[in-house]
Each structure stands twice: as C-alpha cells, then as structure tokens.
Image (tube, rainbow, N blue to C red):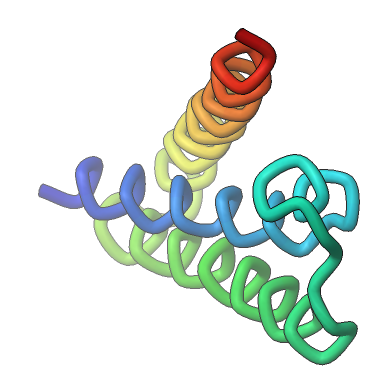
Length: 93
C-alpha cells in the first residue's frame, strides 16, 4: 500500500511541477498562466514531493525508504515526461 501511495503522490508532484513551467503551460493550454498560479503549482509540487518522501520513510524507515523513494520519483518523472511527449505528438497530428 505504501508503494502505491508514494507512486501516486510523486506522480502528482511531477505533474504539478511540469504545469508550473511556462513552456509546458504554453504547450498544454496555449498560453502562460499568471505568475501567482505558477508559483502555487510549484509550491504544491514540492509539497507533494516532500509528502511522498514522508510516506516512504514512514513505511520503510530512512534507509530503505529513501532508496524506494528515489526509484518512485524517477519512475514518476519518466511517466510525466512520456505523457508530455505523447501530448505533443498527438497535437502535431
């Protein structure tokens, strides 16, 4: 259960961090969001990353929790990147 929670929260974190970037806002929405919204997305993304770290460490301790967390955030970042690439290719058709 903790692996699923860490995966979902870290996926949310990277999605929020991607949405906080001007380039991705332009790609997804066709415009840049207001700076206050971008800042809120960035803060939410970092908070979600910290929450996923807390979940992993709480479930498995510092040694295994950090290792598992690194794996989960790597996978989540890859999924978000692949989703953005797929979105661009789909939009280009």
